[in-house]
Image (cartoon, rainbow, N blue to C red):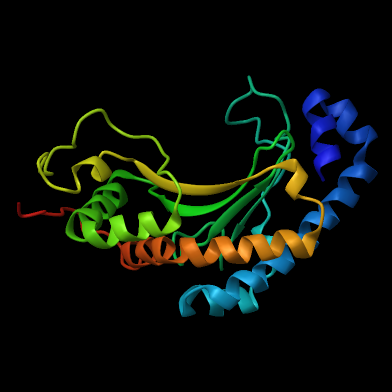
Length: 226
């Protein structure tokens, strides 16, 4: 998987991709096998909503495509030189929140979770949930042992108290944490799965926090009542 993506990054063009399609299929089979293994390891630790979904989910449906949709942006290279998957019941659904992982050479492989909002209504709802439960959020983030990542505003958004303990968190537009993995660590599927299982133990409180935040559709207007 790593060797294939390293070469794809150097030769990110359709002719090379088609000439090496057999190599692509072999690497994809490996990634599917790894995702199937991780699916069950995550289910052993995850909360009941996600665990039950994973037991009946098809690992094939968790994989993201390497070919890019060039209709959206034609100025980018045609392929994403990494293997990516979202370990959840449905990679297109917001709930239950799952785990994202990426295999990419150059020490850029990651495994993580978090919250991403598709529109302003969801964004305001999740910010409100964080504002109301900032102590739980802070504890879950500390348990993860990882820095919070994601796009954010320079100022606290309208409707939220800038003096609140949650002020720094509600600036974010997405809330993501990810455990990095070096190429040297990716030598054995079982060993990697063991590392992932240990990571899930630390990340599960944060994933369950966002699971609760996304459990219900947002109301049109949310009043933080500061």
